[in-house]
Image (cartoon, rainbow, N blue to C red; front, side):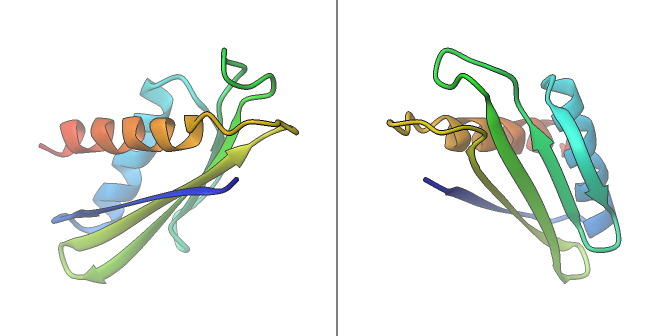
Length: 104
C-alpha cells in the first residue's frame, strides 16, 4: 500500500532539497536518484524487522512561492508483503523530522 506524508517549510526550494539529501544520508538510507531541477529524490531503505526487502520512497519538493516549499514523501514496500506495518510512513516522518532539525 502506498503511503504519503506532506510537510511545508518556510525555506527556499534549493535549501529544502539540499537538506533532504543530507537528511536521507544521515539516516543511513541509499539515494538511488536525485534531480534538483525537478525536485525529485528517490531513496531506499534496507531490510528491517517489518520488511524483507526494505522500502522505496520518493521525495517531491515543490516551490509554492519564494521561501515557501512543500515536501511530499511517498513510499511502498520494495517487495511483496501481506501486511502493511506502516513502515514507509514512519520513515517519511523520520526524514521530515531530520529536515526540520537541520533547517532550524
